[in-house]
Each structure stands twice: as C-alpha cells, then as structure tokens.
Image 1 (cartoon, rainbow, N blue to C red):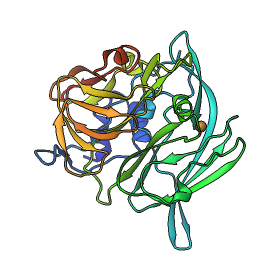
Image 2: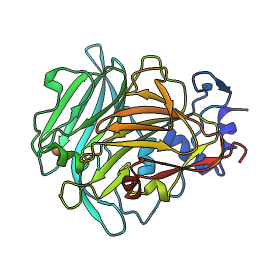
Image 3: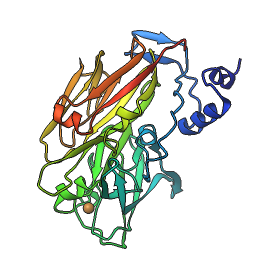
Image 4: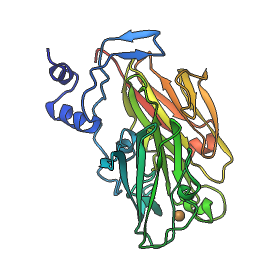
Length: 334
Ligand SMILES: [Cu+2]
C-alpha cells in the first residue's frame, strides 16, 4: 500500500486529505519515536484534519492556521553562499478580539503573532523588512549575530531594511520590534518566533507553535485580554485536534508584556521540557512551567487517553481572560 492511500484512510474525505497535505507540506514517512526512544511506532506523523474555521471571524488570520504554519523562506544562491530569504511587512490591521472589541494591531504579515521563521543552524538568513505601517518599527532577533544586525535602529514608515546573519545557535528564539516604548510596540502585536533547527533534525512529530500575548485595551498599563496565537479564547471555542499517542512538539513563547511572568500548564499529562530549545535531551518533566516575558521552550508530550484536555497559564485571571484552550485528542481507532 502506498503512503498516500494509507493516509487517506485516516481522513473522512479526499478533500480533507489534500487540505492536510497542502498544510503539512508533504508526507513524512519517517519512523515516529516517542519520548526519546521509549516508545517506537511505525506510523508516519499524521496531522488531523482542521475543523471548520469560523467564518464569522472577520480577521486577516486564524489562530488554528498559525499553529502549524512554518515559513522556511526562499532559498537563493549568491556567490556560492546559500541564503534563506524572508519578506516581512509591517501593517496596521484591526483584529476582532471578541464579538464586541476590534483592536487595531501593529503586526507583521497581517497576523499576530508574526510569521514563524524557520532555518537550520548555520544557514545564512536574510530578512527583508518592509515597513508599510504609519509608525517607525524595527526587527530585533534573539540569538547570536553582529551588532549591526541587532535591530535597535528604527526603520521609518515606507522604508525597507535588510537584516542578514547566520542562524545560530539552534533553539527557539523570539523576534520583536525594538522601537520605544517597546512595551507598546510589542503589546500592539509586533513579535513572532524564529526556530533554528539543530543540524541533525529532531525526530518527527506533530509540530505546532503557540505564542502567548496580551492586550492593554485602555492604555492603563494593565492587560485586559490575553490570547494564544492572537485571538482570545479561540482554542477554547475551537479545540486543537491531535491524535492519541502521537508525539506533539510544541514551540511555546511568552510575549505577554506588563505581567512579569506566566505559567503554562497542560491537564492530565506531563511534558518533556527542552529549555529555549537548546538541547536534544529533555531538561525536566513537569505539567507546569514558569515563563518570564520572552522566555520560550519546546514541550513534547503525547496523550494516552482520548478526549478534551485543557491547557492554560495557572494564573487563573489570565486563563479566564482569553489564554485558555483545549486539545481534542482523537482516538487512534476512530
Ligand atoms: Cu514598532
């Protein structure tokens, strides 16, 4: 049996299969290893079909699609050097935070968080930043690079600036605007995740990105709403489908300004934690991790039981004001 016919059996319709294949960028036939070799499964990684998206949501992006959307850029050869080139556009766009509140975000590529950029350690990356917003902005990357590429200089409206450096070290790094007041520029939505893969790739998994953010709606220095991937309560209303016993690799970033730290907790399970994504072996196992602003980690886990399982910061005010969601674990034999 071919890989594709095997996979099609997992989907209710061929259209769902094609939708997944486009989203996932292809079929990984590699063997799945769970928890550093403790469990071996012969199945390839399979991404569950995406549920019907909310057509009432008048937004330029959808948190569910941000989840598994990785931007590898465009590969170019110049003077024998391979360059991974990304284009990022700053805009102002209204985001419907709920049925009553439209928030004018400052954003990158019309989404909050901005695109998840991805490279392998040692790749030369070139980020072409087009500031098409009405304010000055910049892109400051975490990771190692020369001072000239550090993104502290404002890029004025209408201008384009190119950042170029080698992607290092491998791990999970945030990027964000660094124009003062930075709290305001980040709070408006100018941030994203930069994943640098190790030279030897991590084992196959259902990989996803969650970025925790917050909104100070009235400028009083306190956040009123919080969100995973830009829109409060989205994953509460639209749980994330995942398969039972399949390894999940979650790239998690806290970009909540104004609150010094939040935790992240998953229900009814434990995760392996790779701090800052800087190791290939887990640093610890827990079901809750504390993260200051700009902290980010890789969490790996798989769900033993099917059903709906909540995840949220354990600061319950924050969870109850938008930063809460569910995994919908689909039974293996469903
Ligand atoms: Cu800015």
